[in-house]
Each structure stands twice: as C-alpha cells, then as structure tokens.
Image (cartoon, rainbow, N blue to C red; front, side):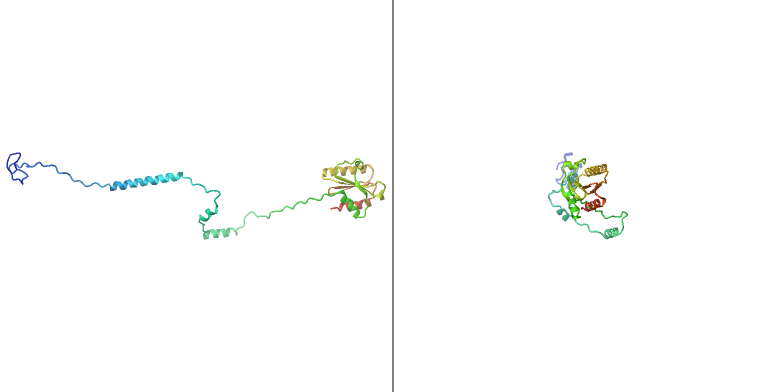
Length: 235
C-alpha cells in the first residue's frame, strides 16, 4: 500500500504508514448506534387520555338525559313489585309501639249525628171533622166554604170547610181552615178573632199544625172545650 502522503510502500495489512504514520485509508466516521425507539409509553398515555375524555363526555350527557315517565295505562303494581321492601328495624318497631301508648293532648270526641228532621203531615179540614165525629160531637152539613161563608175573613186558605151544630142555633157552628203558609195561617187566625170580638162574644179560635179552627162565639165554654180537645188531638 503506497502512502499517499510520503510515497512509502507499506504492506497491505498496514493501516498507517510505517514511515510517516499517516493513515493509509480514509477513515470514515463511525455511525453512532442509538437505542431503538419504543412507542409503548406514548400509546399508554394516549389511551389514558382518551379514557378520561370518554368518562367526562358520558357524565355530561347523563346530566341532560330525561328519563321518560311510565305510561299512565301501565299498572302501578309492577313498580311496587320491583321496589325492594324496607325491613323495619327493631328501633322503629319499638318507637311505633310506644307512640300508640302516649295519649294525645287533644281529646277526640265522637262525631255528632244530627237527627233527621221529619216533615209533619199536612192536615186537612176533613181530619178535624172526622175527629169531632169520633168524639160524638155534632158535625152537620159539612161542606166546602164559599166566598159568602168567608165574610170579612181573607180568602187565602188552601182549603176551608164549614159545619153546623144545631144545638147552639140555626146557621151556627164552626169553620176549619188549612194552610201551607204560616203567614196566611196567622192572618186568618187574627181576622177570625177580630170578627168574634167585634160581636162581643168569646173568640173560640184554635191552631193545630197547619189547621185553624173557628167556633161560633155563641157556643158555651164547656162545648167549645170538647171541640177544642178533639181538634188538638189530631196528629
């Protein structure tokens, strides 16, 4: 090998000139061997980041999801069957048992039951005339009153009957009026008393329920009391 520097002939196995120590061959720079790169740590970090984003996204979407209500037509006992029943603890059972033993401050009173109001039977003039007959009292020619029979008495009665008692004189006896209005009953009662008083006789006027009995003022007190007793006994 000829040295390119001094021209000295060197054996072929020499790398440097034996005369000038110059390099017989061009020394190429040795490649630097570095360790092989691995992507495993980067991959693991990326997977962790992706998982974190996935969890965050699911939590955000879950906040906006509206759970639909059960259809009204669905039976409610299905929910009750799927719902676990709470087992009462010993403390709860003891508290419930003691609570029933403690009297309340407010006394409870039994509900008051209002009695049912009974509507009184509406009496008729014929009820009075029948009562007089049962008491063996005279009731002769009993008939419905006409306008001439009323005289100065207001014709506001629902029904009116006139009867005669021959023992006290001709064309004398009594009148029986029935009413559905208390105001009309009071007007006729006061008018009948005023008529008898104007004649200077005793006003034999009685009231039983919705009936007014007017007896002739010429009737004796004993006989009038018998008629009034039978009249007041009508129910």
